[in-house]
Image 1 (cartoon, rainbow, N blue to C red):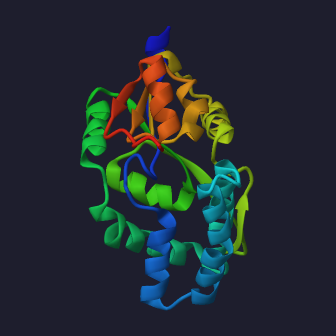
Image 2: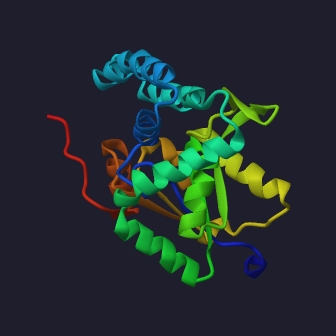
Length: 235
């Protein structure tokens, strides 16, 4: 019976729970602490052409986002686990704390009161998500993992990137490995991007939060609940 299964409230982070972006927070941390500045500028300038090309619709937006997500781990190359944790704490306290969407945070707390299990599911680095999860009271965090060697980060991620279809796969893998049964029919998913569609299709209650144009249109077509302002259509 479903009563023995967990009902999840799944929340994306970037764009859903916050208006901020992890790379901006990391950039501010590295500048303030004068660390990895060459790596930071290399990361930014090497990815800007792809960002511009995606904006001009001559390069895949999905591939653009995947590049940023996969390469951000390089900003922590040779950091110890404890050093990275301190950096993530700083980013959360000094950057993201003022950029959280209070209306979505309120919904998260309401789900917890109902006994639903809170899951942070994001392409962001999992070590950072754990910091966020501890502050928001999340039960599970599932994100992109960074590779370590001799207690230091190598600057690479452990594939796959937690993005697109891989989000849904990693979610099922996470609970499957723990032998936890899920009531997905009665579970909820909150996200802002069309690339979160695989997760939306898994649950009975998908909610588009401040959705991009494609997700907004799809949500209206399917009569999904929409939270936040709808994006302006391109002329």
